[in-house]
Each structure stands twice: as C-alpha cells, then as structure tokens.
Length: 472
Image 1 (cartoon, rainbow, N blue to C red):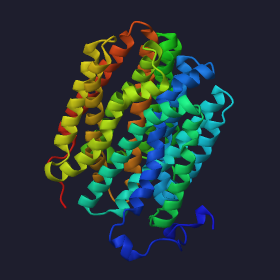
Image 2 (cartoon, one colour; image 1 turned 180 degrees about the vertical axis):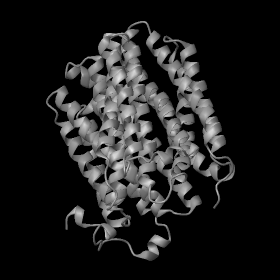
Image 3 (cartoon, rainbow, N blue to C red; image 1 turned 180 degrees about the horizontal axis):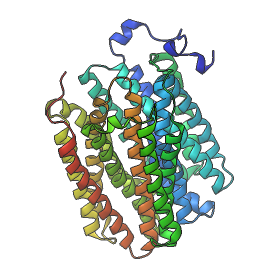
Image 4 (cartoon, one colour; image 1 turned 135 degrees about the vertical axis):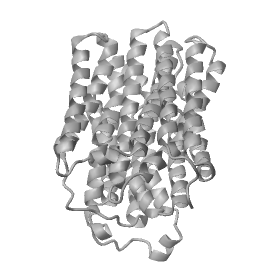
C-alpha cells in the first residue's frame, strides 16, 4: 500500500486506531505531529552554529551563509499558503505525510551537497517540505483534540516541542560539527522523519477534505515572489549597501508582488486567503504578532551565532553552549503558558511575554558589543522565555478565529508570517553585522531592531488577542 492510498476520507486506513482509543484522546497523534514539527524547528536553529563552519569549508561569504539559512526559511514562508490550501483540499494527513517524505529526501541532499549552490537548492526543497508539514500539524491537532481545554494543552505541548527542538539545535549542531562534521546536521533528520511517518500512518485519523476547492496558483506565486524578493533585498544590503539600485529594486518589487497578491485575492473566485478572514482582528493581528516575535528571536540567534564565532572566536560547540540560555527557556515557557492560559486567558501572557523579550534585547543592545558573557545571559533568557511564552496564546488566537473548513489556511497564514519574520530577521541581522564588521555596532543595531519588534507586538496583542480565560 502506498502512502497516497492510506487515508480514510483520503483512502482506506486498515492500520488506524480503533475509535475507543481515539475517544480517550491518546497521545499518539500528538507524538506523530510533534515529531514532524520537531524536525522543522530543529533545522531552523541547528543551522545557525553550523553555517559559519559550512561557509569556511565551502568558501562562502556572509551573504552566502545568509542564503544557506534563508533558502530554507523563505521557501518555508513562501509555500506555507500552498501547503495549507493543499491540506484543506486533499486532506491534512496526506499532505503532512508527503511533506515528511520531501523533507527527509531533501535533508539527504543537503548532507551530500558537493558545493554551496547545491546546498542552497536542497535547502529550498527542504523548506517546501516544511511548508507541507506545518499547516497540517496544527490542523491535525485541532482535529484530534476538539475540546478547547484539550486543544490548549495540545498547542502548549506543540509549542514545547518547538522549544525542545530550538534548545537542542545549537548544542546538537555544535556537537555534530565538532565531532563528525557539518553534514550530520542534516543526516539527523532521517531517523526522526521515518519515525514520524510511521506514527502518522498508524495513529493519526484521516482528515476531511474539500476536493472542490481550487488552488489559486497566481496568488501562491505572488506570495513566493514577495518572500524571495524581500529576503534577497535584505540579504544583499549588507554587501551592496542600502541605497544600491539592486537592493531598492528588490524591495520595490517585493511591495509590488504583495500588492498583486492582495488584488488577486480580491478578484479570485476561490482565493488562497479569503480577505474576509483578514477582517478578523484576532486572525490578522495574531499573524502579525507571529511575524514580529520570530523576527526578534531568530534574528537574535543568527546574529549572536555569527558574532560569537567570528568576532569572539568561539568554536561551533562553544557557540551552541553560549546560546543555550536563550533557547533552553523556550521548552518551559510554552508548556507553562498553555497551563496558565486556561485561567488567565491569552492576552496577559502574550503581552507580558513580548514585553519581557523586548526588555531582554534592549538590555543586550545597551550592554554593548564587548560586554562580558555573564551580562548577556539574562537578556538571552528573557528573549527566549518571552517569545515562547507568547507562542501558545498567539497560536490559539489565530486558530480559534478560523471559520469551519479553513483550519489549514489559518495555520498557513500564521506560520507564513512567522517564517517571513524569521527570514527577514536573519537577513537584516546578517546585513547589519556585515556593515558594522569588527566594531560590534551591527550587533547592537540588530538587537535594538528586535526589541522594537517585540514592543510593537505587545501593543498589537493588547488590541487583538481576546481577553478572558478559555472555556473548557
């Protein structure tokens, strides 16, 4: 039996669990979904400590290193809407499973890449696989745990898995690079992917599908173009300068592509992102909050990784250990916020998390580029804890605002904006480092930009995130 043939509403599923076990809300669907999400987030953080080493071995400039990181995130961001639409059309379990297959195959391609261009291309394909995995992950959790309280716990654990992956990434990446080599940073995905696919086929129930929903390919292409052009402009700004005609042209074309997307969605008979969804303050505001906190957090991790290795002279393993205070906090914060939100509601947690993260990055900017490492630990912990503390609430806000039949689109919107935030944070941070090479001014500017993004997110949360505890 092939994967495409397995799936209930998506095909017969002889191996699916019996209904009584599903009624007890088994943890098996959560484990299956989280295994896939673990791979996706691990590849976001594990590459940060490996990228400088890859750059040296493959003779890649700082701009090239940015593309090794951003090739993944921009494809991830650009194709998330496609992944969400395909999930709603073909069934989220099927698309999730195919995403795992694509991700594992492209990870093998990254591991055996003979040169930088091949590696960037394989990273782009890997990002496409991630874009098929993530929208289905949230939609499958919403399907498996329909009660609001159970869903809140599942989203909290889903966010905690992101924290575990984010925490493991720098240390695991540094350990692998320092021992068996950077190619194992990608080979580690193979056993995780195989386990995820096996759990999905056996334990995740078939999901509904709407075969009549058309895919809006012009809109999908406009999203990809917007993400790619914006990321390219920010990446090249560090090498060419902010006023270079190519940089200005890329930024202008990104704005044009975004306008084309909005126009297409207004005129399309079956839009990829119905504009009525964006009229929901919770939906659109929650998506922008996701963009801003990913911009701040992943921009911080990337710029700190480069600064620790290039200016402070740390090894990959030492860099992973140095970043651990930032990412370790994420594994606790998501689970804690999932529990607290049932009593306090999401708004206080999102607002307080964003303010704490803003305080952390502002503290780093004020401390200066040559501050002793102990002074950087509290800012890193504040940024990591605050970002993850807000993740569960913002996720629940967006998914709770999704109308019936659109969980995949809502998940795709939220994760598209988050990955655009990651890509632009990395691109801007790398460019600022390049322009302030040797002085440390670029690092301070990057941290200040992240702090500002967190402050704006806190203000949006007060306006957009619903108040009051969730109903059981």
